[in-house]
Length: 139
Image (cartoon, rainbow, N blue to C red; front, side, top):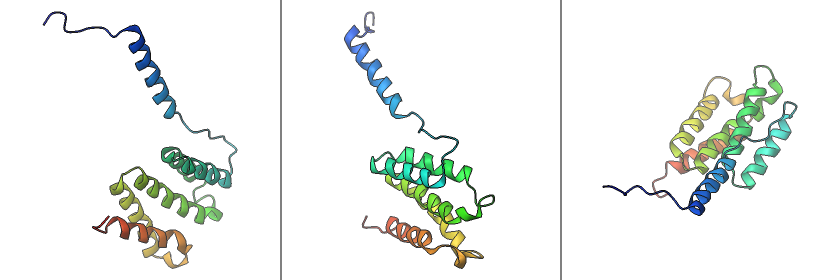
């Protein structure tokens, strides 16, 4: 088929280039500085959620967990539990209920395991409630 392949008009090509550039801009890494404190991570993540930018929120929580693990920062135990819960919940908000359920299940397992009764209860309670809702057939 000779002549079946045509080039795009200059305006259309520019439009596709611009659309690709704009979409790529939506994928840029979130601004995370080396001196961010735990409250700043949570504030930035909450702001991202308010903007419905769930991927950025997950990035903030993930970097928080990397920078402030409980092993080196025991005072961050509750923050770590909340960050784990929020990452799982962001997966749900993005439509990935399978991953959300898996991550929430891991969090619940910590509460069901040895020492679980000593953990701050709220993240575990919410994790159980969300898993229950995700497994309800009428959803």
